[in-house]
Image (cartoon, rainbow over all chains, first blue to last red; front, side, top):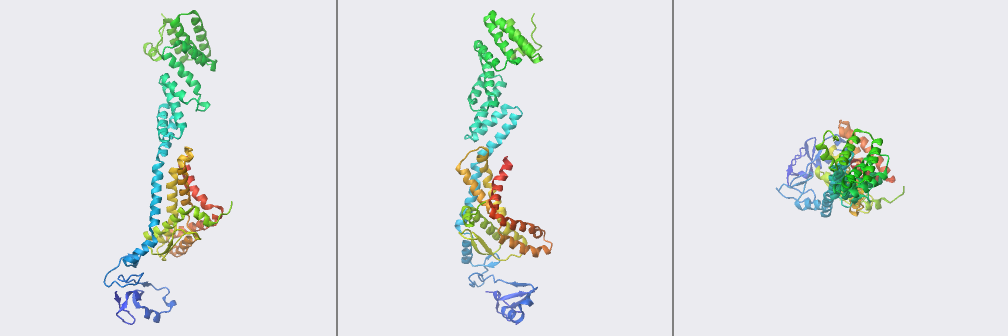
Length: 301
Length: 175
């Protein structure tokens, strides 16, 4: 225990815990009570000093040993432990650690949804920009993260199908589009895309008989579009190139005329030029190869 | 609106009550303020409390009183934010996601300091505002808002706050 000297009665063995500092002057409790009224202490700087060798909680004297403090109170290890136990009991610590674990768990467990969300947004942006390849890649990745959401898979099939159509890989496109046709809304017009894919697939496999059947199916959807008549002309050109029948020749000319009546754009003219080449020469080549061989169009000699 | 006794609400949102008192305790410990008594949860009114020595530093008073607002709000958001996506965006009704939402919202519901906390800030702010303490001056409207909010608890203001943080903010972020 430490002592101070009272500046009023000059007692030298006043325990620190029984003294007060009033405006930086030391008084023992006895002198404070005898000298000051409560009103006289108002407005003065009164400080209660704590003896760092005496426990503030159990008042046990630890001699010359300076005790650790809890807040500003010197506290023996046993009392400090008791307060610690009371203020932060084990169950509360465990509870809060549990909450932190939940925060981490929630983030980790749901991370796949965050990834899926980001990929879906990227896919939506790509679809708006008509970049179906990127959209398909992002939708497949999103479905990988959120397999519970089957719509992602169907949409990925759709975008992949459109991508294959754009890449003239009709057989692959057909497979992708058929995988999603039963699940997609009508405004995606999957059946029409399937017909397009079937046209491409039958043409690619040189199944011209089937190609003609699909072209007829394609025309039945809307016979006011020049493009559909040009497809019919293409099918009849193939049919004529392989069979040389008169009926094919007649039908080709009818379809060719209808296509040009309904659409006389430069694009249509180029397409008809390609059909004419096929019809006249009997040589069936792809649009890509035709463009390579006849960059300025084909002229009948 | 219908009336449910506060004790039942406290029971249904007990994690929030515990986190609220924990936040008070945390800031007491951080600012080296001696705690005289603490109750993290009980079936009574109030459902929890922390009794600490009087503070003289306004920042300390402010932090201890307002601590639950920051801690509970932050935890509510951190728990609900990732749990929101599967429910709302991907429409996956997994019980775990709903459990996380309940936990987050229950913590958010207990974010607002009590009237006793507000009163502590008010009393200290009156003294420190005179010496030009900006935080003390700013505390006056905050305390008024807290009083109004606590008055509105009868019309589920605490639930609406929890939902606003746990559901509203994620919906703003994720759309």
